[in-house]
Structure formats: C-alpha cells, structure tokens
Amino acid sequence: MEVTSSQINVRTGSENMPCHLARPATGGPYPALVVVMEAFGLNTHIKSITDRFAAEGFVAIRAEGIRPVSPTPVPASWTPHLLRLPDAIFAAALGGTMKIDPEARSSMWEDLSRGRRTEIDYLQGVILEIADRHGLPVPISRRVVALVRDAEADGKGSPGLTPEQIRPLP
Image 1: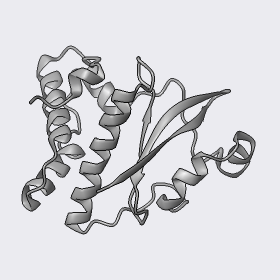
Image 2 (image 1 turned 90 degrees about the horizontal axis):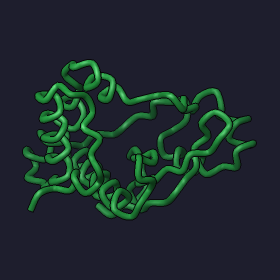
Image 3 (image 1 turned 180 degrees about the vertical axis):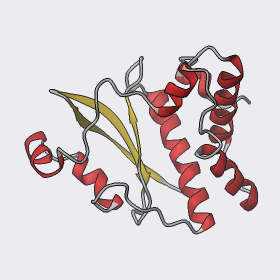
C-alpha cells in the first residue's frame, strides 16, 4: 500500500514537538502512524522505517477487512488534517482531547522498565498473524516483535535502539 507522509508538530505543554505522520495515500477509514522524534531526532532513516512499518500494518488490516475506529470523538480520517492546524486553533478546538504529556512514556517502555511482559503480542503480534494468514511480507513488524521479545527476555529495560538497529536483517 502506498503511504503518504509529512512532518507535523504536536503541542506538548508549552512547546511543539516535531513528529512524522504516515498514512495510506488512498485515504479512507484507516488509522495513521505518528512517530514522535526519538533521541536522534526525525532523521531520514527513522522516517523511512516509519513509512514501511505503517504500510505493513495498513496492508494487513485491509487484507483482514478490519475497519478501524477513532479513539477520539473525531473520525480517524480527520486526524492528519487536525494535527496540522495552527496551535491556537488546535488548542481551542481539540486541546483537551488530544494532549501529549511531555513526561509520558509508552506502556511497553513502562513494562520493559519494570521487567514485565509487554503487550507486543496483542499489538504487532496480531499484524504478524494477519500477514501469515494472507501471505503478506512484514519484515519490519517481524523485526520489531523479535526485538521487543529479546528485550523482555533480557530484563534490562528498554534497549534504546537506534533506527539502524531496528532495520530488518538481510
């Protein structure tokens, strides 16, 4: 599936955080993948991985006939446009429903930090199952699942991988 991507800014407290947005080029009722800058910023490599990772998931959910629903009161298809609104308009219209806490961490990061098993099987593991049923190649998803499982087994918290370390092995 072709993916269209762009840089957006998401308000975090009193600052804007640059993020990378990847979504299906065809539009429709599919979700978007937003990646917040990581330790090395939003470099070309992490953007490329994000776009390929998103495409794998979009193809899998379409093959399975899944029609995503919006986690907010706003339709999912509006999200890319809303995130591009000027800060004042965004804050007035949606500030209370779409805030990102600058201190927030993902639930998987929390799980790894506390030595708990993550929900990787319920998130990306489902994409692998769907891909297997439909014969779809999802190398980035497979690599991410393997890396998270390795981190769980290591029990040392988040491995803090670089984008190059996430790239699927040849």
